[in-house]
Length: 535
Image 1 (cartoon, rainbow, N blue to C red):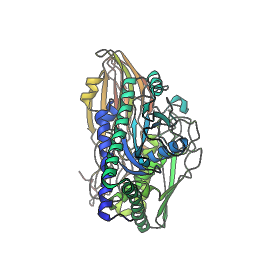
Image 2: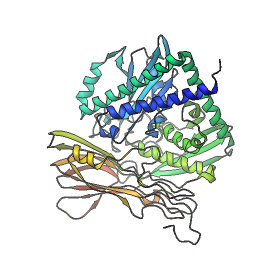
Image 3: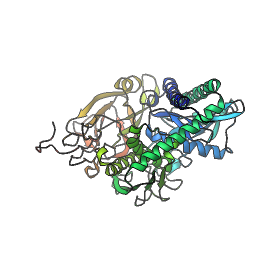
Image 4: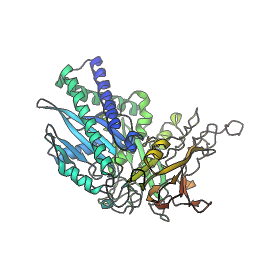
């Protein structure tokens, strides 16, 4: 029986609403500021085959790959999860991102019938490993990057696997937050299970299963029709990362060829650099996420949802052993820097394909840091994590957005009040950087500068700022200028001078030291008719 269009649309929106409600449960239940303040997580619903049906709207870098992780988990567990199970996975070579991103999946059963799955992915502040906060561009193998969970059962037929929790508590630097945030993920999945069961009670389980499949087929038909309208041609673009993760190493090339043909898209990464001996590599699932984001930017105006119906029409080709398809156990903790560049290249390629919708490039500098310090007020060790936005690319009719965590990221900045209340740091300044956006008829968005001062005896941790090389700054479009590059600098407590830091590294600080992070500006669009830049 075919569902009538009204019921189909009601249920499609219900699935989306359930994903959003799951997200509310998660961030209101979480312990770590990186989830409850910066929103570095996502929730989603999947059908019984593990295909993504609907999702919440937080971090695009996580959205496009959750079904890869779920399907790998199902393979490991014989194709299906039993009622009352919950699996935990973060394995980058089993559909994951980096090890900080823990994914939890629960089956949704109504009686004996499997209707689908509820899932959550969230960045955890620390999952063990060499560096405080786990993440670093300077890991050299996956085993430096903390605990690896290859789709193990966190809950088995309703019984919590306490051994897993014991292992986590014994191996992470902030067990209270990690275990608490994992509980928030379970709570979000439980809410998804409850809400889908309620829909089944109202409409019938068979109708819900049918609606999921019909939604994916309808999305696929809409996306295929849209892609068929695009010029049948290929576009090749390339961009670079500043280096291979360590100061003095060569820039790393990412090249992709986008081809639109017969209602489908193919993206070929031939010409991309080989994998690097650092944490800058990208797991294949994350490469998909960067590509999907770019496509969604150019397809979303048509009301096309991002789910398996759209993504099944997008084919990636990436040679094994390259940056975007590394061989185990290559490190990939800082994979997000390359994912952002992939998204940037997709925006550029699609702009070439569809020039009437082209925009200037946004920043991909993504300044981020995790610093460990003992807080004498609480007598506890703390892990301060933060991320800066930067300049968005200008459009044909508007300036770029300021202070935006662009493309696949979409994290919020950590509020200064939280920084100073919960950590032994003082925020000296958070400001827009005048003149950082590219010039043109419309200016690129402005970068952000944040300075923080240590208020306890010592601190150490990792940081990185990509796009510090002006040659790789955010490009202007149609004659617009490039944005300014990002950078990091340190001022010791006994000096008035700023010391420029490498783009990626590990920092040790003393009481009174101040570190400054500056993101990159966005590209400008067009030239002013009289040659004078738009004010």
